[in-house]
Structures are given as C-alpha cells and as structure tokens.
Length: 64
Image (cartoon, rainbow, N blue to C red):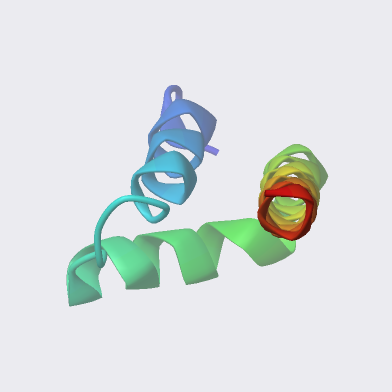
C-alpha cells in the first residue's frame, strides 16, 4: 500500500455521501477495498450510521 492510500480512500468514502464520485475515484476505491480490511470496516461503519440516521429520521416523522 502506498502511504496515504487509506486516507484517500476513507475521504472518498465520506465524500460519496455528499456527491457522486468520478469514475477514477470509484475505481480507486474498488481497487483498494479488497486489500484493506480497515477501509472495508470504515465503509461498513458509514453504512450503519447512515441506516441509523434514516431510521431515526423516520421515527421523528411519525412522532410529529
């Protein structure tokens, strides 16, 4: 792994929440993830947090 590679990939995974990644960025992430358990865990954590936020937002709508 090149130094900073994980930093780049985690930044891209976070960026993907706010914008569509470019083709080059998506390829960079897809090439890196199979070789890095830390970045895969980070992606899973983002997915869990996103699901929890959606669920909480849904509960808030029901209470209003």
